[in-house]
Image 1 (cartoon, rainbow, N blue to C red):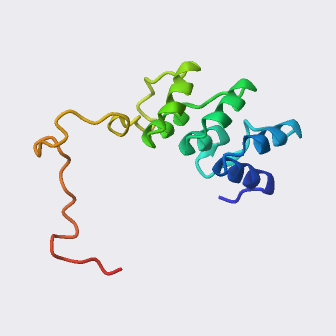
Image 2: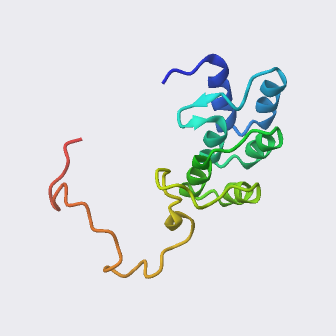
Length: 133
């Protein structure tokens, strides 16, 4: 994926938590809703980074959040961002084709220490064999 200069600047503004830069871009006429990032929309990118203030600004401008934004925020453990999106009316009951909310990343699983409930260990590489890196 190749980003244009304006999109790259917005991606970097999200990483830097620069809400003012996002606001200036919007006021200069850049359509924040159609800006693309490495993960899709700008709002989803901000959700993945847990940039609640930027998301709040975008939502206040009428930019819709796609369901993937909620999933990305939950997967990264950004509880404030998840709360904002839920308070804004996002439905946590996502269609099956969306990435899961991964509730285990937000709240610890019951019996997390029980070996019977842990996921199976990936058998490759076998124990005692070092990978060549």
